[in-house]
Image 1: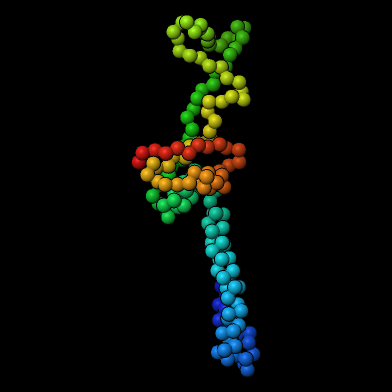
Image 2: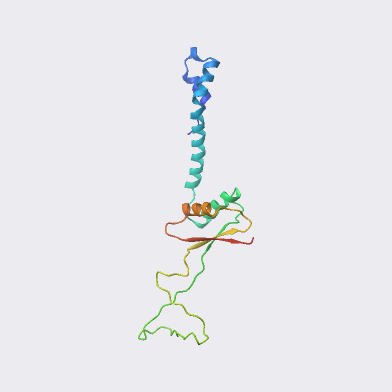
Length: 163
């Protein structure tokens, strides 16, 4: 759909009496900036067609990151995993028939119990991007790539692992 051969275009649009080598060369030199813009447009279109085919699914996000950092999506070294689940603690009234929770003094050597507000959260991520430790990457670039494809409102963390 987007294939323009500028040499054929020049020879087809020029009248027969202007089709000299010198005049064609001069027209070609005038059209050179347009040819550069056309090549940039084709590159941009290819990149955008690749981006449109991907979604926020885990498999697509992993493929996009592996394609960006390893040249193809077949190596599968960058992995997306779920974040760690931290169960929440709810305090009930005595009239409610729920499991008893005991609060101890600090002098009693029991396991620590922390009560958090709803605004405070231990688990602040929805998923984790696991990157091999050997890979040299720019965290801001990876973060922006993940932000393009992830669902709106989801939070993530980038961690390295030993491969």
